[in-house]
Length: 219
Ligand code: G3P
Image (cartoon, rainbow, N blue to C red; front, side, top):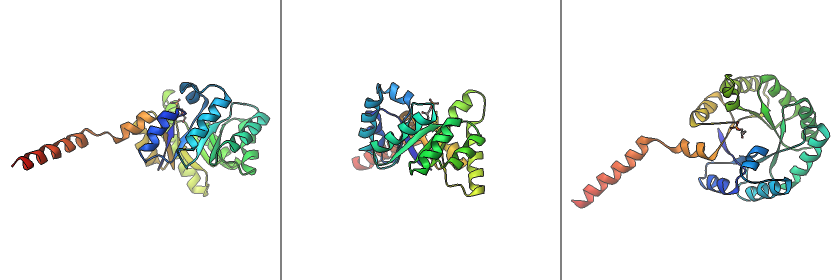
């Protein structure tokens, strides 16, 4: 399972990329606002700075909700950087926009996916990746990882090439479960990426090696 960083904060992305384990970045309007990136020009500048740090795909979301607006924005976003994935929501207008943009060779990250049916529609529309929102489903008492697993199984049965990108990941266990479910990618916030590395036995083990080394050097 590949790991993407879920952030629009340039400094945070720099720290995440420096770990050497991240191969892409996902952004959205909420993450941009949280990073203090307000307005399209400033979103574009942040995305371009991020694209200078990572070769893999950078997902950038449209703001429009109508077909024409999403297509116009998607075509524009596609010119910003060398490896864009345009994020389009799983709405009726969104599927129309996805199919038009995908037919023109633009890569699509189908976002805000909350059902198998939406994932089937996105695959037919030509999405490069579908993003089931794990944490937000859990928040309303539904099984987010269960959805990831169902989509993976159905795509496998039909040889569908669309990648399953587990999104709205809230904690390290979600990453384990997404990998077990067969997700191709998980996009994780920086704090979750850091928490994935932590284990108390690792810290204790490092300390014990250092202590033992110190004892033997003293002899
Ligand atoms: O990748 C989508 C993600 O940014 C949404 O996460 O925590 O707002 O549900 P969250």
